[in-house]
Image 1: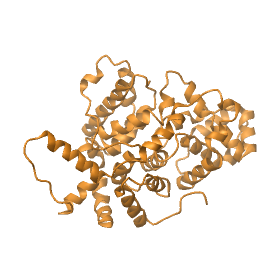
Image 2: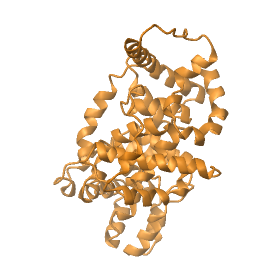
Image 3: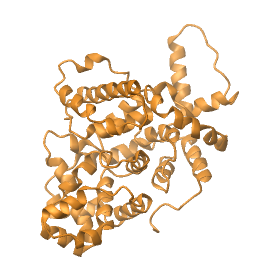
Image 4: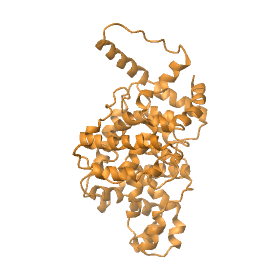
Length: 382
């Protein structure tokens, strides 16, 4: 569609991302375009560099790993434990049991740490589906930092003590459908199906309902680069994509709810992402919010988005952040340890892009993948 980002080659995208990351300040608009455009951020290696920038997280100033003491007398511990134990399907097929157990323990500590640091946040079932995605891609320490930023911004409405704010977010769904297909909207309205069928889609960023991990990551690229309501727009395009199925279904709540609750696994994700991006421009939240059902309540996620956007515009590239980090450590130490010259060997080049110190146990899950894509990625960039 004309309003979507233009299609570019993989090699050009790699070069564009590299240039955006090394610009001073970081070219955040360039990174957002790359994340939204066809194929998204391509690899987990790139995600480990770009996701923090999209959320204004300094990878050289990450929170410490939480100790086991975080679990003591925590009001949410038992529910978190139950949800994590039920999350086996979210881990890669073929992962050894001991590796999975390590990641599950980290998943528990990650969520409890955020809930303890932010007592205003309330755990909800489905939060673990988002947390495990970040843990698998970026590891424990960076996962905590990214999830903490998301919890206080994009996911903030889901973490209220009641479901009222979540219902408010769901209320944006039908106005989008009405503007694109009045017939479909009226049919769904007559059936009284409501919007609860999309609840698990939104509160897990589709992590709970999609089986293919690559599809989940593609959507995370898109959502992290977009407005907090973009998952709602994506829900709308899924329903619009299934328009004929819905109209052929019996016009009653049980039938349509059952149809829409199950997301087809073979959706044309790139086309739907492009359409959702277009619909956001055509029907922005400010226009949708004028409708009566959306006027009475304010969304914390929407209200704080502009502030988050502004923060992302003034980030330094990792090369400078690394120098500042090392310089700070040198001030704390006696002596003057030598620092290798940039570009002296391939390991230094990999260090520029890698952040292995932050990977933690996630390296167990992604090592094989890294071996497949890292050499090609580095050769194309350097």
